[in-house]
Every structure is written in structure tokens, then in C-alpha cells.
Amino acid sequence: MPPATWLLLVFYALAASVWTVWLWMTGLKTVPASRAGVFTIFLPLASATVGIVFLREAFTVLHAIAFALALAAVLLATWPTRDRA
Image 1 (cartoon, rainbow, N blue to C red):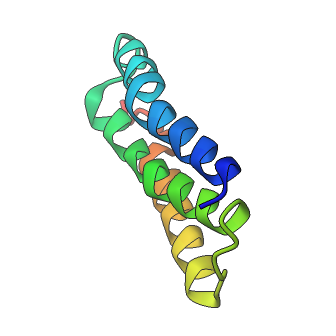
Image 2: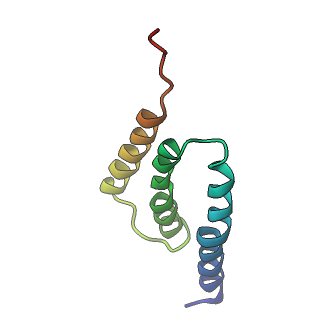
Image 3: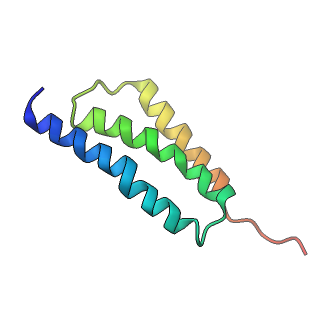
């Protein structure tokens, strides 16, 4: 593999393991875990995006459908509700 690819892999490994964990733990101070758990869908979306953009993986219609469904799920799970009092 070219050195640039190795650099991207090291960057992604650090981002996925160190920075993400710090951001996650910091965010859990203010966001309930039941809502924060929904956002774990962004980890595989980020991985797929790195593969498509930087590693020149093929982007298919199935990828587009999966991305749309994942984002729709996050929107549905985090949509603000009205109190029925």
C-alpha cells in the first residue's frame, strides 16, 4: 500500500479509538444514553465514507439506500416530542 493509505489508516484508527471515545464520554454527561446510543450508526457510515472517498471503493445504489435508512433512523429516534399534559 502507498504511504498515504497507511497514513489514512492510522488517522482513522486514532479517530475511531481515541478521539471518538473521548467525545462519546464527554457527550454522555449531557445526553441520555438511550439517545446517544442511536448515534453509533455514524461509525459504520464514517467507515464506508472513508472507503468510498479515500480508498476509491465503489459506491452503489445499495450504499445510498443504506445511508438514507440509517440517517432516517437517527432522525426518527431523535425527533423532539411534545409533552401531552
